[in-house]
Structures are given as C-alpha cells and as structure tokens.
Image (cartoon, rainbow, N blue to C red):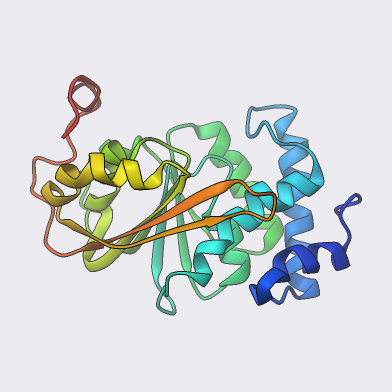
Length: 240
C-alpha cells in the first residue's frame, strides 16, 4: 500500500475540482500499482519518478485526466502504443473497467512487468510485443481499435503515423502531450491528414502542481493508406 500518500489525500488530489470520486477499491489498485512500479523499477528502468506523491500525480492522475475531457464509449477496445510502464492505459482501466485494454511495447521486459501488474490487479489486459510501426501493419491489429492512446512516446508527427493505422474509421487517437502540444499539432497536420485523421479537439490544462499539458484528440475519418506506417528507417529519415 502507498505509505506516504493516504487514501484521504489521494481522494483529495483526484477529486480536485470534482474530477474523480475515488473508491477504496480503486485506491487499493493504485496502491498495488505504485508498489509494483517501485519494486520492478529497481530491476528494469520503468520511471525516473519514485516518490509516492509524485507517482500519484505525475503518472496516475496525469493518465486519467483525459477521461474528463473526452468521451470514450463504453466497452471500447483501447490500444496503448508504446505503453512503457502502462501509462496511460492501466490507470484508465482502473477508473473504467469496462474498457478492453491492449498494451503494446517493443521491450519484452516491460511487458513482463505489465503482465504481472495486470494479474495482481485482476485484469485480463492483452500484451503485444512489437514496434509500433510493425504492429500496425499486421492483420490482427490494423484498424481494429476504437481508440489508440499514447503518452510520452514521440512527437505528434511520428505518433500520428504510428498510431492512426491502429484505429478504426470513426474511432479516435488520443495523444497526451506536454505544454508544447499545440505547436506539435501544427507540425503534424500533414501526417495526420495523410494517415486518415482529423484533429477534433485540443485542450490545454495543468496538473495540480502547475505542469502544463495538452490533450490532442484526432478522429479517424478515412482508412490509412497501405504505405503507412513506413518502416523505422524511413520514419527516422524523413517526417511526413
């Protein structure tokens, strides 16, 4: 259990401005997550943030705040591209257990952590070991998801090419960005269009500590052309 940050303090943090009413069960799951994150972080590099209070705010709350800004339909299939330590999708799952979560990452050791974490939380989250650009070209995953999410992976130009191919027409790609998010949207307009997307919402906001954030919601309005995503060498060589 989280020792430094109590249930009451966590509820106060999550409930600021009436954002979330955290139940004891949800707090318990976040506590398990926090302890496992710190334990596994001693063996593999998962996060530079190891203080309980900062984990609660900069990882957990940061991951779930988009739920107050965009409506994810009930029982949606959600793929977290480049999930790392499970952000944002595992905290989202704790708050929205109806969602079907797929965790995609290129490192097997991170997926081992996520499998153990999911088991301890009682979730049947699916894990996929793949680079983002490779998984998006497979029949199993191409345009199969209602929602793609990504946090702290790459700039939006690359992310759009990585993520939009996973999304069904009519679905959406939700990018959790820092304070430079609007500038990234301007730079990514061509990539978004080429991959079948259209920016439907941009929201600027701050964490309780004052850190700036930008939420970018991109609607999938047409199929992604077969040539996207390109291979990693092509993506590194030139942006769309």
